Length: 92
Image (tube, rainbow, N blue to C red; front, side):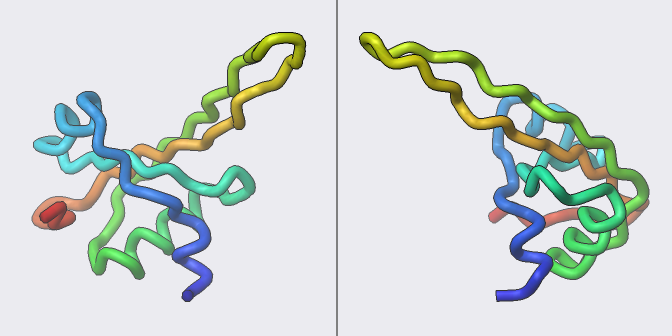
């Protein structure tokens, strides 16, 4: 397993991500401590494409309660990666 596989956890397939695909934008679930440069290098190495832009967002976990115990769902970091003209990630 390479170090780049640790940065990218999953390629997210949601309704929003399928709407963004014609614009060459893909949504990834990434490790919380990685930055935009690491995400760009990881996507370029794993998928053999050229990245134009990376935007990140952190989704804070919600407070949950089960009977008398209080807990919290985990925080998630997402990255919206825009590819350069002529590149595409094959999702099949």
